Length: 200
Image 1 (cartoon, rainbow, N blue to C red):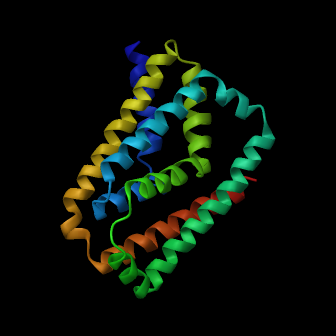
Image 2 (cartoon, rainbow, N blue to C red):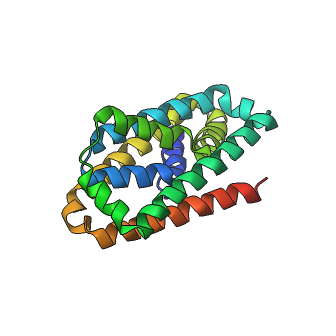
């Protein structure tokens, strides 16, 4: 049982900690200190549900259905390109940064809906969390323990990221830092979209 748990934790940690759209969103919300803990909790919940779905059958379904994988890839390319373009515009246009600073806080509902979009419209969630983590979990001696280990890695990572970034916010919340962060996010999104295109 413990071996399956540790396997789940290590595999999930290796994939979750890699910088992606979800991590970038949690980081940005935490630096703003804008509903960052509910966002982290939502990311953990989504990961846990998707890992369990993958371990207990969805990974096999996706692997056997090329049409579903193609839809996930093309939808992901469109989403990642749009998200990257928005980040690039923010980085290139100081006026946009000022507007963001003066716009005031968003409601918890608006932030959580945005977090859901970043999580569920990102194809890497399905390719990594469901397909890869899920198919490995289905082969474990105790699949339930493996899923619990993967969920534990997600819990530790997202709350560490949310709390750590919020703590560092006073040092990182400078316009130049935000422009660099947005440039980094844009490059990452475009690179992930290109990766998906190369896989077609």
